Amino acid sequence: MSKLLMKKTKQGLVSLVQMNCVLHWKEADGSIYYSFDEDGMFVLIHGGDIIHHLKTTYNDENVAEVVQNIIAHGHLSLNDYLNQFELEERISKENMFLRLYNDGWLVQVTPLSFSPLEDVWQSIYQESLRNTPRNATTSEIKRVNEAKEASRIRFMEMIDTRDNPKDAHIIDHGVQKLNPELVVKFSLSRYEKHLRTELLAGLIRLRIGPLTAEIFRHGLKIVEKNSPNKRHYLLKIDGIINDPTDEQEFVSKIENRLTDDRKIVFTVRELLARLPKSDELVLDGSILTENFAKPFKRRMEDDGPHISKKIKLESDSNSSSNGNDFNPTTIALAASASAADQDLNIVSHHLRLLTAQSFLIEVSPGSFAVPFTSLTEKLREHNFEMLVKSTLGPSSFRILRCLKRLKLGDEKLIASEVFLKGEDLRSALYKLVLNKVVEIQEVPRSADRAASKTFFLYRHKPFTSYLYLKELLCFSMAQCVSQVQKFRDENKLLLSKTERVDVKGFEEEMLMELDFKALQKLRQRELFNLGKFNRIKSLYSIFQ
Image 1 (cartoon, rainbow, N blue to C red):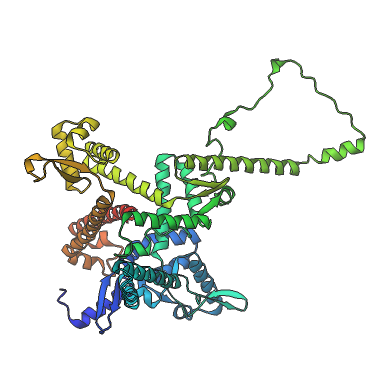
Image 2 (image 1 turned 45 degrees about the vertical axis):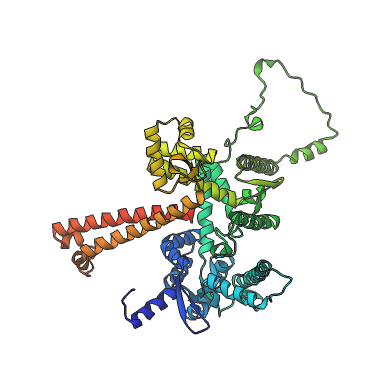
């Protein structure tokens, strides 16, 4: 219990609901229940990175200002915000809001945005169950499945209406605008897609190289907006999809549908047009194949005299007209076209290199689809293995790779595979089991399951390991923030001195030497903990 007064509690809940950190649900009897919403918290955590990214993307200070206001207040009414500007500036702001909304960075706030999806689902499901009558010819299992399927269709239609509202745009004097009555908030799922793009490009940089990674990143940018969310809203609700096989099939269906609609497919020419023309991205010589490695044939001087065939010209006038065909402009255009074709060929080779390692799928000649599901899994596997290697040691890493290959193994089999002595093996296995990387499976040899006749096998379950790792990372982030607050509380008097108007900017001159050293130490601690917090945050976004 918080032990706060009712008035203070209500004020705090209102602020948290406004910041999208708390959701509420009203029951039929009038009782209101509140639940935590992690989306609002993650928007606040990533706030600085979000503002910096959008400022860089749109190259506009006004975009950064608007997004900062939205993040700081949770959501924003377009009418209230635009009414404070003059006509010319208002039109500019309207265009900016329209662009952000169309690019997916802003979403409309509806009453459903403040309700927990699990409660909405349960309400629809219970209603469908009541409307599905019992009869002698239908079993209870079939009745429940029918009610669940009807509820799922209705629920998905409701979410689709929320995500794609029909009243979001209006036509004013032939110009499309956002409806000024809209209330908008920042879309965390859109930013998560951007993070996924950067993380996948980083994986390619490690596996293949920086130039291929940059080409791959620009390819992902083309399909980023229409790419699937990191986690579908149906998968966040308990009871809809429980079986891991069904979940995998559901995610694959979504990705296949997006591929068929060509929403996550890009062509080589689209990619080439998007690549920046700068000295930082030099394509020449980046791919070595039989065609590119073949040297240019030059005639040597000792080859002997070369007799060229003479062509008889019809007339001098024809000769002069034919000569004009090879003017400098024509030669420059031909050279430019040749260079463009060569760049197209090089980019195609980079994409085929990615296709060979299953980072892309060539759906048709020159068209490539991005397998986001398998790429995300590869990204998690790579980072998890590197985390195990750096924290638990090379022996633990070798055992993990061995168990991934064997699926199930005992001490004797693992020892023969990883070449470790019994003592070292048991020590490494203990660390892995303690950190939920490896699980123990008991296998009895007798019907009475006697302990003396039981032996143990080891296995690795990625889902359990990732879930435990997420909890550890959350705790570590909270610990970093707690440490910063603890340092501030311990130096409250010193910080109150530095906040004075006459001291700000002149700390070295106005403060005593001992106080100034303490202030520097405090700032160093804060920077260290905030840097650690950001590193953990980046790692958490991989397993989120």
